[in-house]
Image (cartoon, rainbow, N blue to C red; front, side, top):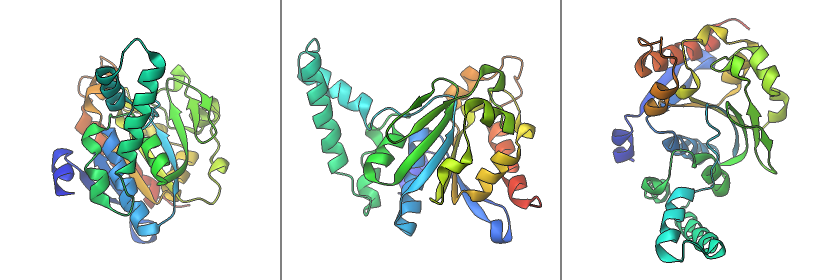
Length: 250
């Protein structure tokens, strides 16, 4: 555990006070949010629903890239069926070596995971029962999991209008425990003052908040004129917003 904490520059931040006190876990690369979700699962022994706010959907299958590369190296790359079968074999082998009751067994496989595979890995492991992905690239409804497309005019926005425009309503969460997940590449400029009642409600409802710095994507996507808007500035401002959500009056 200590190694991934060190490598990912993990920051555990206490947010809120009193009855509203909870924790936010900040990681460099988004796939390592899975480790925080797993720790929460260890304590509660029940799967959570994830609400993630991200520029990208981050819902590739578990270990998709690693297994694809392994498949190409073993079978004829032109034989699509053979590649798919070998890829699935590699994926299932890795998942079979991961036990949600054994944190280190999951940590041992993290070097094989890409930064858009954590959600479906958590679904496969039973750490999550469902997810709602609010993103800037795609809208889709799966048997388990829904993508909500944020209109370009609302990129980086946390207002009630943004949630309405992409079609997200928190009633879909029901009574299931909630984990709120935020990728800082969603913010092309400082826009934390747009947060409305629904975002505040999600923060208060969440039992855990995870944040990914995703610095390479953040720097690529941020507005060119916002040269002073650094990843550390964005991280600090987002944590400050979370604190405000947990200290304001109902």
